[in-house]
Amino acid sequence: MQLTKREFLKTSVILGTSLAVPSFLNAQEAKETEKKTDITPQLKNTSFSWVRGFNYQPGYSSGSGGYEDGTGWSLWRDLKIDIIDRELSHGKELFPDMTAVRLWLPYNVYLVQPKQFLEDFSKFIDIVGKLKLRAMIVLFNAWHGTPDFGGFYQGSFQSMSKEQLDKTFKFVDDILDRHGEDERIYAWDLCNEPDLRVSLDLYYSWLKQLHDRIKSRKEKTVLTISNCAGLRAVKKYEPLSDILGPHPYFTYRQPDDYHQNPQDYDDKVVGYKSNLDSYVKFANEVNKPIIATEIGWGDLIDAGRIEKLRVELSSVNERKIGWMIHALCHSPVADLHRPEYGPVASVGYMGCIEPDGSLRPHHEIIRDFLKQ
Image 1 (cartoon, rainbow, N blue to C red):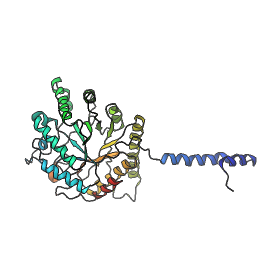
Image 2: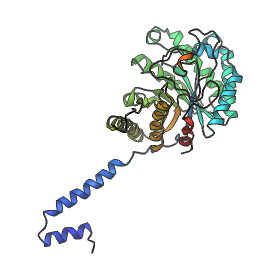
Image 3: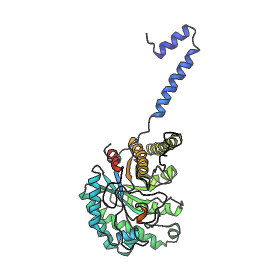
């Protein structure tokens, strides 16, 4: 005969075995606690969990072979819209279930040729719409690589005059006048990685002005600020973000001797997932969605890169977090090419499609995560 917990307690008292009761209860409670601990926190606001795609930088260069290849200036001052059309179309063919792309704008090109820039941007968005994708637009950038895509340095930003800062607001006004109600654009990223190296109060003040200006317009815009400085930065920019936009990269390659000594690597995976859990718990507190606007830490070794992606993609999907891999294809932009095409930093190579249009080895597994 099976006894309920209540019946067991009563019987134990009668039989004088009350000393066994606490150990029984403790064992049961320990199992229940263990089960609760093993449950992965789920994102409650899943309004942007459908976002699954890639950051995109064009694969062509200026042809000079110099430092400016791979900069926003080089790619946008003479935008090759036919190549962009071909690359994005090919990306959709290789990854038919992708839903979104994240596009970076070069503010310095707008300053020099504003009319042409705005026309080119509209053509870019036409291609996104033709492929039935939706875009997140990165308005400003604070990340710097080699070559430098372009953006605000600490020193240059601090020395900008009020007139120069006002131009940044006009840049946004001009873009939103054209595309503020464009359904092909689902969100606007105010600034990529403003806290990457140095946290500046001036940055926050400017971003708040930018946020307030956009929110005061008639359009119903969705805003985010992407960052890679952990939960601290996510919390800092949450008041200015309708979507939380962390860059939760997993930076460790599985060692060759993993099966002999898995503990250290497994601990890193557990730590990575715990970090994601902290994002989810905070997002649930403020009732906001999350998009990991960059994942896919690089590697010159194809199998090493895909192992990192496997950890990242399985973890974000499990928590219902939207995501965009950095990046769709080979490009002269920093971190998106192999050594024979230019300087490579410690991050390695982050492209998913090779220069000849072939899928990078092992990267076909991305398709499975797109379908989940």
